[in-house]
Image (cartoon, rainbow, N blue to C red):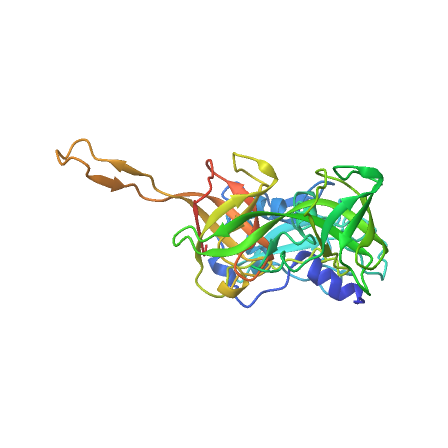
Length: 345
């Protein structure tokens, strides 16, 4: 993979005006906004935008690119973000506050100390692993039949025997285990299947059975675990925050990493994906689904009423599959739950 540093800069922070951008004069400001802000290490683009704008994802709509500044799409600690109005329109601009040395190489981490668009630590592990698979994909994958040295379970630095891997161009495989089905929150239709990450592995000998060496264990491996080739095309930190181009109405159907309370920077699974118009960078509003309660006042036994949905936060999609996608909760104004609704902002 190769890419010019200027093009990478645009991808890194998504500061170009997207096809869905509205006019700058419609962008609402944060009533407590400063006139200028000095960037510090640990900031993210979303955090900085939130200091100035009511909706941080609208940053690209008002960003002014100063052609006199090298790589104005990259922002570094010490740089100064300014807020002004030009001909009545809001404008956010950059004053270079530090000397930076740019390197013309592609990297999957923030370039030379530039701040990231969102907290990458929260999503890094979900960018490359095959977490959602279609029906039949796991059944067709190679599987573990035994472990070396008569072990019952697999562990780090232990060989596993696999049926079967023949003449593979890949030497790196993820060991996964079939998990639950992801279902549409309204219809119950199966949209895909969760693939639980167990460990990494390296192919030592191909054949039937093949031999792999296990490493980076998150769970002990067992017979029947499947192997999927690791993609070498590591995604760049490339997000264009924008509303989806199509109307999207869906729900949160799961939360990753085993947490029960969903809040800021938790990763959630949506029952809408690329087929529905979502892509990395799509911004959605989260609504707490109104509870259906029994009306004890009407005098009609069994009568119920559904309370209205209430705003609960904002998320940004960072990875899509055909019918399912992963989103990072960027803002949470109240507790968020599985089955809460998501829609265009």
